[in-house]
Amino acid sequence: MNAGTGEAPRFTPVWDLFVRIFHWSVAAAFGAAYVSSDDGGTVHHVLGYAVLALVALRIAWGFVGSYHARFTNFVPSPREFAQYSRAMRAGRERRYLGHNPAGAVMIIALLILLTATGATGWLLTTNVFWGSEAVEALHEASANAILVCVVLHVGGVLLTSWRHRENLVGAMLTGRKRND
Image 1: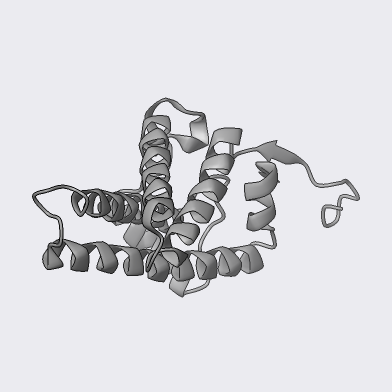
Image 2: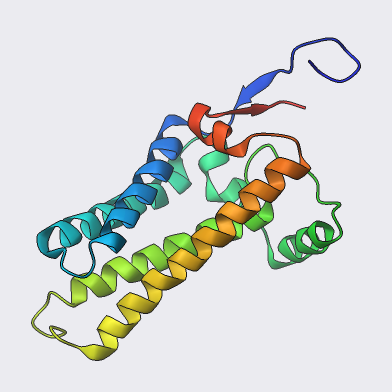
């Protein structure tokens, strides 16, 4: 019930099916690739290529997808991000129906890191970079940076869910968020 009105809360579609499938698929594929990295062989490679394919599709969807999926509708300017960050530290950030500026920056960072990890992984399979310690170090550093970002992302989701009294994990499952 909405406070004071006696009405059930209204929900609106936010995350389309592609965004939700991408989100959970890339999380599963990257997680499985990371876990299989020591002796994963072909499985590790296939999972890495799957992540790259998913990222390529998400980038395309960022230009042609639904309203909340388009980069033009959620990527903040540096000034907007700084203002949001200050408001967040003060506990006064506004609620967004789509991605907030911190979430948007995290998406961009993750897309870049996933691309870097996949590209360096592929380079390691080529004749030119086979056995390159520098490329392998960059591949591992990118993958580990993704893990750091995932921890920050989950923490941000939990904090935002608590502050705005909404279940963001549920929203990424159903595609709907509270309309108020």
